[in-house]
View 1 (cartoon, rainbow, N blue to C red):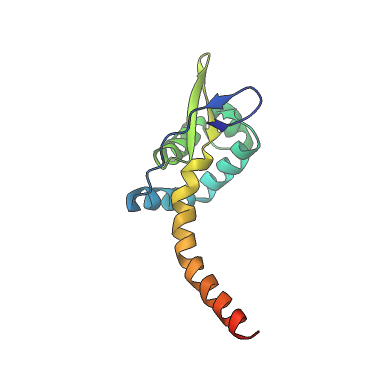
View 2: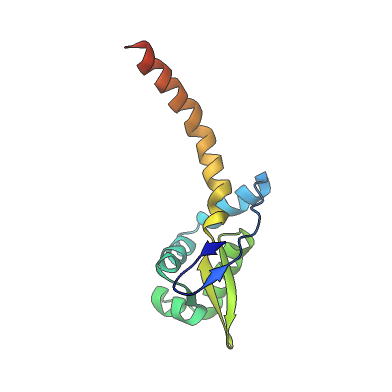
Length: 119
């Protein structure tokens, strides 16, 4: 289970680490407004209207950005009365982390070998 704030717990979904999921996440993260929304959601869950007021764009535009982030697995929504409240899905970043790690791990292993040879 993932913990997303005071008194709110959600089940984690299995993370699809397919290349297409990685591409969706990277594409979603490539838009500055979406990154801004993620930064706000990282602080606490918020409804679309709250987000729209903070980023100074229409609720419709925020909803469209959140839909892209949700398809990429980076956020999820739950209902609170008549509104949808969005939270960050930390597990959704796993494909991006794995992608970046694939570049770093070979270089770090090579650096480790060089350091150990220099002893």
